[in-house]
Image 1 (cartoon, one colour):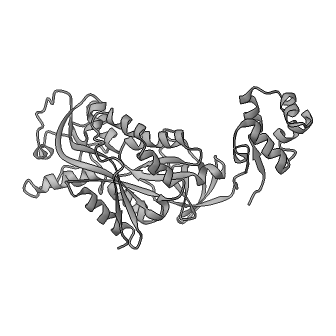
Image 2 (cartoon, rainbow, N blue to C red):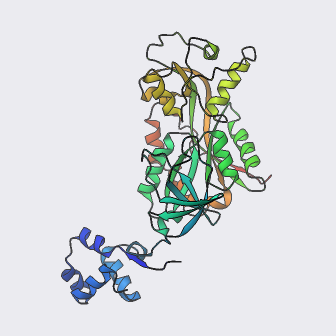
Image 3 (cartoon, rainbow, N blue to C red):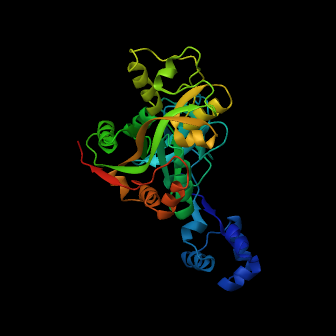
Amino acid sequence: MDTRLENRVRQHRKAEGFSQRELAKLLGVSRQAIHAIESGSQVPSTSLGLRLARVFGCAVEDLFSLAADPGMRARLAPSPPGLAGGSRVALGRVDGRLVAHRLAPLGLTAADGILGEIDGDEGAVQPLADIRQIDHNVLVAGCAPILGALAHRVGQRFNDARLTWLRAGNGRALDLFSQGLVHVAGLHLPGENGDEDAAAAGQRAMPGRRLLVVNLTRWRQGLVVAAGNPLGIGSGADLLRSDVRVAQREAGSGAQDLAVRLADAHGDRELPSTGPRAIGHGDVARLVRTGSADVGIAIEAAALAEGLDFVPLTEERFDLIVPDALSRKAPVSRLLDAVDDPGFRTELSHLPGYDVSQSGQVTTVEAA
């Protein structure tokens, strides 16, 4: 393990507006000593480190940390469609093991590392963040766009936690959860027994573990169509029309499962598979807005965000499945604190298409 010491004394000094000479005077040391510490040629004593932290009003760990090992190895999560060759990865530690998830090439999510040589289901990783940041990262797989806002709020409120949202439909989220590749899985299920169904799904994914089902929001899922609904699309039966291009979602996603149920309800017919492929609710709405698809199944919030019409089909709840053992320890406990934060619920209530009436509600699922 590389034990070089990284320090952020210079950044803190400049942020406070001190010169090296002024800081040295406050601490009772020479300006040369401050220069040596900032350049990394001198490691301060414990006493001096504590005094530096007191001057800057921060923790010693905010000033000094061990450099990440450039030869780190990580379990490599199976890649979603289209990302098999990506080298940018998000990193987190799940059950004591470092896990890497490939990220989309557009740079919408900042990477924690660069993937190097791959050997089976493991890979060498060049980290781009220090070890503290990686160990503080909560990996959450799910399709709810509001997870992006939740990630921002966790990072905003806490110094010892952050959240990376990994876009995944129900099936993929549960697969990653069951394999110990994410801390938390998000899924949406229809009907009034959604929490019970989520509990059962969690037990199947992780038998023998006590789990929590935490409601994030409720929403309506249905047909996203162009403004004014020019093709007169009004029910699930219209997904089977030969003149309609249907945005496709991956097998195992909640949207695709709903589409299959609708097709089965109309003579056990198969859905057309010639429409464009969408990744997530927002992508479905963008395909319809740009005219690449005539209709797709997504949540109401996605349709409203793109100025489209929406035909509701079902009401659902979106839940987070969390191992109980992780729920009481940071960084996962910080995620639950953020969900229960009145400020987050207030923000969510002002976003069209989301229902916060049950947000933060927790159901305990005993080990199966």
